[in-house]
Image 1 (cartoon, helix red, strand yellow):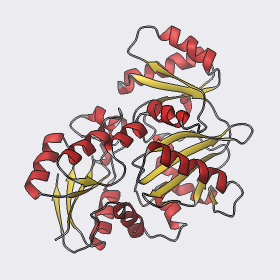
Image 2 (tube, one colour):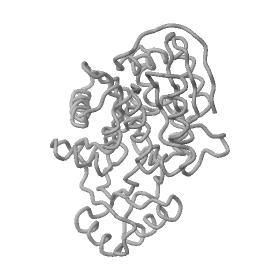
Image 3 (cartoon, rainbow, N blue to C red):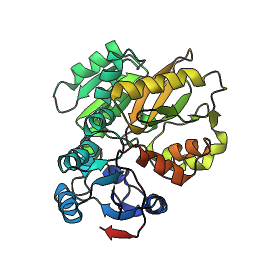
Image 4 (spheres, rainbow, N blue to C red):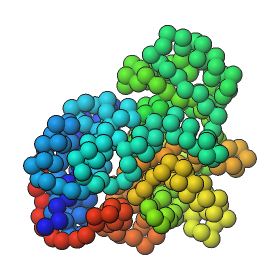
Length: 343
């Protein structure tokens, strides 16, 4: 019997805001569960609350593998956005001998902390925006703002260093002066309890998102190009992206831009030591030069998400996508069964 642990974070739709904005929707959980079934697995579904729950379930079921989309622990909401959750889950699983999907804990830590991501990419001589980091727990905010003005200059874009799903990001994240910068930094602290943020050069050009899959052999999916003048990709904007897909560009290898973006994506995958799947966001400057602005180690696996959309244009079904993520694990095989739901 081929058991697999399916770990996710789920809250009712009415609670999907703030720290919980990144939690998986009901449809996503059900779609992945069905895909795992179709691939021949006995699925133990767990809405992940805390580390103790995880350890108890692994010990009880003697499970050797896990399909993980959980970003942290629901009992500790900060773990969902501060960059610690995805890595923590994988460290627990690794310590208990459980093989998990996506990249290792160390890579998750790099991807979930944008300052660390940029450090690695800069060392690999890959293009990233000029940037500075803010320690919002310090009292010298005025001095840090002055440093940002000198090193980055306006306009700049401000985002939390930790987390994903555009938590703390919206149209006000584009900064044109010191007062706007101070206001946004204060909002990050007061609304989310965020203590570290990153200010980078604002790039006015087209944005792209690139999906890379594989481990020993890596490949890039058809690339998604966002429409000109597309709004800042806040959590609210991402929720309605699927309704505007007809406005998006799909870049295939025949497109003159594809090779350059593909090269950067594969080099990013390699520099971070990623495996399985990642999604890389890039944006062009005023001269059309692409820069890497974000790396998502646990990209959304919603059937309406960017990764699924790009996979469809590669001739893959949703089941194929889930199977591809799973096949990167060394113990992948298929058998058959039903599921157990644990919440």
